[in-house]
Each structure stands twice: as structure tokens, then as C-alpha cells.
Length: 455
Image 1: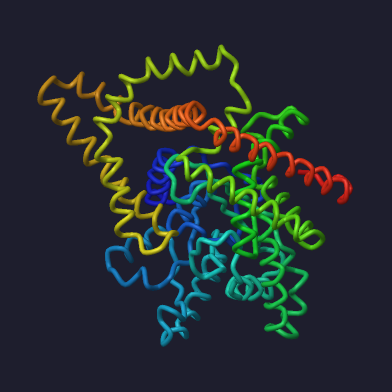
Image 2 (image 1 turned 60 degrees about the horizontal axis):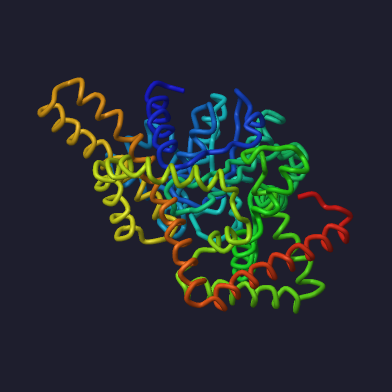
């Protein structure tokens, strides 16, 4: 890494730590420490995808970026300094596609230096829970190099999975897949380049899909999300108990992929059963919306916390209230302004988090600096330093307190519902028990029929 890129990466890693609860990296050892590498990444979250991958890879990443970003002179200077390589897309510059010969030449020159290049083969960002049909550019770049420099390029599929694309303090998973066998396509490429490129592109498509939760149909994606909300914690708990794992050691993406496989298996054999479960889940969710309740509140009614834990939560609520008030007062504007801008500026769902993060990168230092300056003028340097340290800490604590307060409000609503409409409260509990029971039976049948497929 050069000094400029190292500085940009350090700033990006800090803001990712601030914005996300965690960035988990799976199989980082698959990325070679040196030599030419081509990373092929899915593209669910716009500019943030590049920040996440760059933070996960301890090498300089040369991204292939749409040439439209280089039209602004200031942005172009930054991208060139960061090592980005422009690529012309048909939807942006249909009359300049011939200039992609320069892109291929730039990639070859980078590989000659032993560089690492990252490409988004889907060609655009999207909010769907699947890898869209990828373009052939990655395969063309890889095989053009492989034909001249055999067995020197490492081509890796990379999967990005965001727990909640638009949420603050969510989790992100970066999964590096196994290297693709480029040498297996080299002879075919020399005989028929088009056919070999198509074959490698299909291979890459499957390899990228294997690194994420890939759902082909929108209705299946909605069913998956609903089952995850109701049942994935149950599966995770079973895995932890069976294997002696901690919460962070459970592969949630693997669990989700198992649910996708089970949905497909049952839809091919008992579609009416899948539809019945889906209808029951929708009915339950409609009841939650009707009474302004959350599912974890109903689940909490079924899984009563030990008295000791409830006392701890109550104590935290009382003691944490002054910290919440302080954190909310000094962090309210730098928190709300980026959120407001994201809602009004983002044109697509995939732009929301990027706008919010970039706005936060500007708003937080500006507001923190102004507040610290005011404290310095009023109370001196020591108090200003202590105040500056307290700002991010109190902000995160206040955010956690708000989340806990939301759960507490939902529990109060449920208690009020149980007191005034006991039958409605009982129906919610019974509906959830029935759904989870049906999912348990389906899981047992699927595991038995697939010879104990592991989740």
C-alpha cells in the first residue's frame, strides 16, 4: 500500500467500525499476500461495498469503477490516487464502449506489477437477495491474462451479506470463496475464446452464489426473511448447544442457505404445505402490526427471562437513563441529519446506507468539533478533551438504550393488550407457537430426507 491509500483505508476502517456492529471476514487466508489477484464481488450496497472489501483485504485494492464517476475532476483525482480503473458501461456511455480496450490494458499492467484488482461482475448495485446474471468482463480479463501467463493469476469469488442494508449498527459478512481453476479453461480459450469465456462466467456465477444467500424468486425471499425472523435464532441456539460454539461463531449465512434449500425442497414436493405456512406467517405478522407489537415481545412471553436477568435489565434501565439523556443531547443532530439526508437524497435502496455514511463522515466531525470548541471556550482544555472522548461513547450507549427502550415499550403494549383483550394476546402466543412447531416438524423431515444435511 502507498501512503495515500493506507490513510484512506485507515479512515474507512474507523467509520465502518462506527457505522456497523461488526464486519466479519470468512476465509481471508484465501487472498494471496502477493502476486496478481482478481476479486469478483456481488454488489448489494453501492460505495460501502468497496469500503468493506478494502478494509478486509490487507493489500491495495484497484477497483474497476464506472467511468461516469470520473467525470468530476476532483472525484477523478481521488479515484486515480486510490488506484481505481475506469470501465465504460453501455447504460452510461454507449458510444464509448471501444475505450474498454484501455481498461483491459490497465488491468494487464496492474497484474504485471502483481496488483490486486476488484470487479463487480453484476455491473450495477441491486437490492435483490441473489446474485444477478453477471457480465463476461471478469472472465475475459482473467482468461486473457491466463493465456499469456499461465497459473499466475488468482481469481476469487467474494460474497457480501448485509444483515440489514439500511440499518445503523448492523452486521456485515465478507466471504472469500475458493480460487477458480483458470488453467482448466486456458486450452479452450485458445481454440474458442467466446465459448471459454461463457463457460468460466457460468462457473463464476455459481461460485459467487455459493458465498451469499441466493434466492431466485421475490416471494421466496420474503418467505425466507419471515422464517429467519421467527426461527433462525432457534436454529442458531441448537447449533451452539450441539457444537459448543459462541454466538459469533455460528455461520448465520449457512443457516439461511439451509433454510433456502429446505424451502425449495418442500416447494417441489409439498407446495400446498409451504403456502399454508406462508399464509399463517402473514396472518401472524398482520396481528403484530394491528396491535403495534414486535415478534420478540411475543417470543419473550414464551421464553420468560430468569428473575435475576430481569432485575439486571431493570437496573440497567434506571442507571443508564442519565447516560442516555446526555448521549442523546450531544449526538442528536449528527445522528438525525445524515438519516434525513439519506431519506431525501438516496434514489435507490442501495444508495441509502452510502449517503448516510458519507453524510455522517462530514456531520459527525463538524458537530463534534463545534461542541468541543464550545466546551473549550467555556471550561478549558482538560474538560474539552474529556468531553470529546465522551461523545462517541455516550452516542453508542444512547443508541443501545433506545433499542432497549423500544423492546420495553413493546412489552408494555403486550401487557396492556393481555389485560384488556386477553383473547387477542393469547391468539398471538398460540399463533407463534404453532408456526414454530410447524417449522420444527419441517426441519426434522428435511434433515431425515436429505440424510442429515448439516446446518
